[in-house]
Image (cartoon, rainbow, N blue to C red; front, side, top):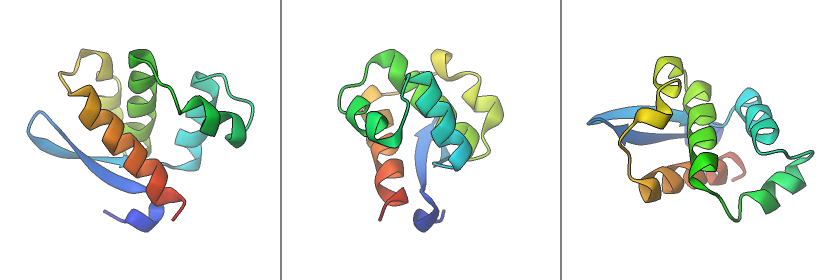
Length: 96
């Protein structure tokens, strides 16, 4: 993993998976959450729902090359707190 590129790992079904905040993932997240700008997105991310977590996790998995897994996010058994921590780590690493 390359933290400087906004990459982080998350364990799903006992296997490490890569999340990455690519430009494409960022655009997908903005659109999915109805944000017109990065400023809007930063405000929007302060309170997220379970649906938001699904959208965020799927976009970041696709950014990390995990396309098949991203398509199954709604069906995954995953701790929401763990998912949120990984997502926030991914965003935090991309701006360091």
